[in-house]
Amino acid sequence: MTAPLLETDGLTKRYGNRIGCADVSFMLWPGEVMGIVGESGSGKSTLLSCLAGHLASDAGQIRYRDRHGETHLPATMSEAGQRRLAREEWAYVHQNPRDGLRMGVSAGGNIGEPLMARGQRHYGDIREAALDWLERVEIARDRIDDPPRAFSGGMQQRLQIARSLVNGPRLVFMDEPTGGLDVSVQARLLDLLRGLVRDLGLSAVIVTHDLAVVRLLADRLMVMQGGYVVESGLTDQVLDDPQHAYTQLLVSSVLQV
Amino acid sequence: MISVDDVSKSFTLHNQGGASLCVMRGAELCVAPGECVALTGPSGAGKSTLMRMVYGNYRIEAGTIRVGTVALETARPRDILALRRETLGHVSQFLRVVPRVPTLDVVAEPLRRLGVDADTAHTRAGALLERLRIPQPLWQLAPATFSGGEQQRVNIARGFVHAWPALLLDEPTASLDPANRETVLELIMEAKARGAAILGIFHDADARARVCDREIDVGRFMPESAAP
Image 1 (cartoon, one colour):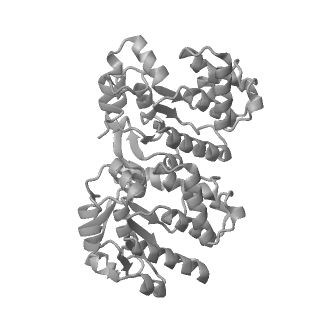
Image 2 (cartoon, rainbow over the protein chains, first blue to last red):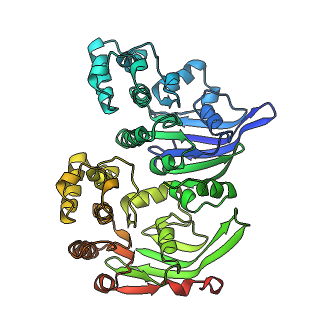
Image 3 (cartoon, each protein chain N blue to C red):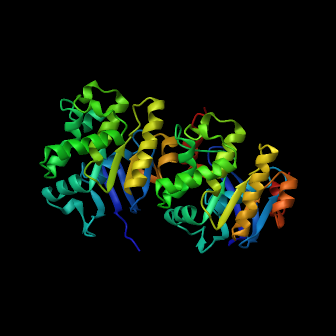
């Protein structure tokens, strides 16, 4: 029997008197993709930031089991320990590729940097790895020396994904990964993410407000409203047979094409 | 292999005045390995509702549904996912896939999820597509632009690509020409012969007579309040 990768218990974050997210408990198992949906202000991004260690929570616990089977409480770890988790075990894909890329550095440099941070020094190997990743995210090899500035939005997003996955993380946090993209580019990115998750055995937590995205990408779903998780379960069960009034409203509000 | 015992289902519509609709009460059936059972009844009788509860799409309000060793009413999401991956196949009426993914990959995906390598999965997917007369030049195209009958055949290929011990079929022969309908009936017989337990909805009476061992009229599980 395998153990959960990530587990939270009563996780709460307040902004003064206002609630960011409250009393969130769940378990994420290896290889699972969990979607978090809800309208703006529902607390889904706050929750993601707490999980990824970008925000300190006010109450509750996060437990993470690393690749050696050791369980950590990131909140009580030293800064160096937290940095190690973020660098070696986790990845974070921002909605805006500019937040996850170094815009002045070449595409190859963007992918190579995390490898160098892990101690790789052999230039040829790093360049080879960068070329390999460019191919995986469907960017032409001859663009390796171009800066992300010269890329389209969809290409920048794919480059960010390459940069965040090059070190072989086990858990990926994604904040609206298909957010600002053209629908035609979204589909390609979804397919790419699905293939990577399957082939690399990644676990992921994906925040989005797009129900079509979670339907295709997430195994499980949490629906948030006003900082609380109001409904959770198997993705198609939550979407096809929503129990909570807010989820029913959300599902019935989607425009049909 | 599949058993349904004293299952009830109602829907509460919070955004329509909290109306509560009870659509099913006391549903029961069982399907043994190698057997094909048809759900019958008029439109609105609850055939699809029952199928969705067996697949885990709909919550089970009361009663028990078992597929293999898994009790669906208490199963965790990850148990249901594992059940669908390994034990319970499904051919739905409509194909729902990531846009722009080539047909061959769509069909091979259930095998890839089971850890089968890409070459083997593609070979098996190709063999099924060929049997279902999807021309090879279409295999690298996404099925979104295909005709209704072609999409249905892609869906069927995907539903038979792995030898699931239990299968749910929702109108598998709808919108198919005679030759392809024949192939689908053959696929169903082969699945029965290897011991699969099959539960299906077939509006095609002749197809039903040929592959099904029993029929269950879902109308009798309809509470009186919901009867038309």
